[in-house]
Amino acid sequence: MPISDTTFFGGSTFVSSGSNISIHKGFRFWVVDATANIDGTLPDATTLRLGGPHFYIVNLNATFTLDVKDDGGTSIVQLDQNEIAILVLIAQADANGIWKGSSGPDEVIGAA
Image (tube, rainbow, N blue to C red; front, side):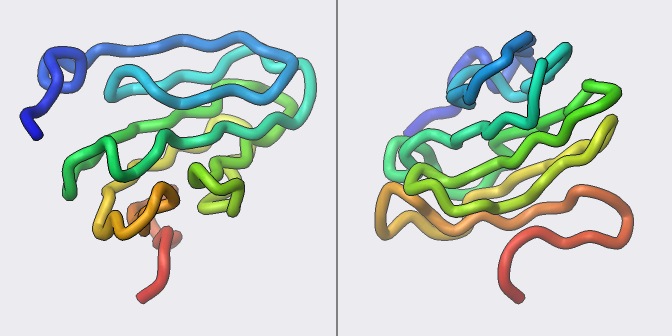
């Protein structure tokens, strides 16, 4: 599956939301001004190519956390205020996929 223009050119999506969101477009995904702790759900992993990074997610909210979940609703990483996650897809046997990445200098996302 070829890389999308949005990903190649570094497209960004900005979201201001008080409810759960779908993370589906652009390489960079910025969450700003959320009114409560919200969930961000990743797309069906079988629609993406392996590797990445697919997403660079930034929680710019000064108060609330963002819980990033796979397509099935399992938490992958919880981002506190002003934290960043970089996600790579390493397997895609089902819609949930297996994601790895980093959300800081000492925090690895995903199983070893």
